[in-house]
Structure formats: C-alpha cells, structure tokens
Amino acid sequence: MKTFSLTLIDTAGMTRFDTVSQFIGADAEGSFGLLADHIHTVALLRYGLARFADHTGVWRFLAVPAAVLRFADNQLTITTVRYFLGDSEDAICESLEAAMQQTDSEVHTAKAALAKIEHSLIKRLVELSSHKGGGL
Image 1 (cartoon, rainbow, N blue to C red):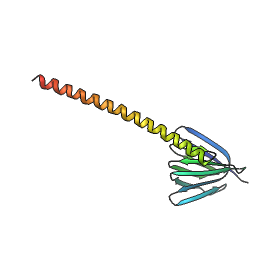
Image 2 (cartoon, rainbow, N blue to C red; image 1 turned 120 degrees about the vertical axis):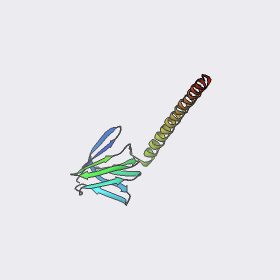
Image 3 (cartoon, rainbow, N blue to C red; image 1 turned 60 degrees about the horizontal axis):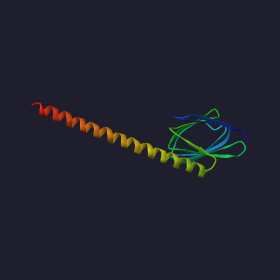
Image 4 (spheres, one colour; image 1 turned 135 degrees about the vertical axis):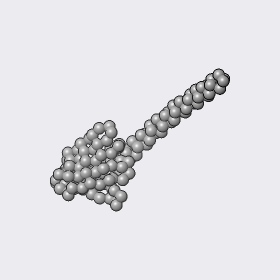
C-alpha cells in the first residue's frame, strides 16, 4: 500500500507521521479523503474532527479549531493554531475538555487582573482630579 507523510504544525511545534495511508477531513463543502499520489490540494479544514490511518490500518484522530491543509508530492501539511491528537474520539474529548477548563481559568485570572488595573486607574484619576481642583 502506498503511503504519504503528514506534518501537523501548530504554535507549540510540529509532529510528523511518515507512513500515512489515508486521511479524512472536512471543509465547508463537506467530508473528503486523501490517498497517496492525490493531486495537489489546498483546503480550509473546518472546526471539528479529522482522522488518518497509518500503513497498518491504525486510526488516529485529530481535532482542530480550523486549519489550512496542503497536499503536494505525497506530503500532507496541516497548519493550525492548536490541534489535539489521540487514538480515540473519547481521548480527544477529554483533551478538549481539559484545555477548555484551562482556558476558562486563564480568562478568569486575566479578567480579575484587568479589573484590578482599571480600579487602580480610576482611583488615580480621582486623586489627580481632586488635587487639581483643590489647588485652584
């Protein structure tokens, strides 16, 4: 069976698989598949789950918020902000849930810090206004 390479790229780094036999993903038009020797293709993967199999038939699942896919010369490259990779759909869901909880925590911390800064700025502006007004 002919294979191709798959390179996943996100802000954290890169992962490469050298013996991929097939890839199934989805863009705005719907699901599609890629096999070795496919014509040059560029697609925008939509938010969701894709999957690929290696030469032994083992499937892996890939969750992306959105991604750019490029296939040329038996090399598939998927570039995204962040991806989640797993051997089962359940593992992907657990990874996504943990990442969402982490993001929610970080957003909450950032909002609290911004509220503190805003409070300090308003307090300082009131002090400056009082100082200017009192000096007249």
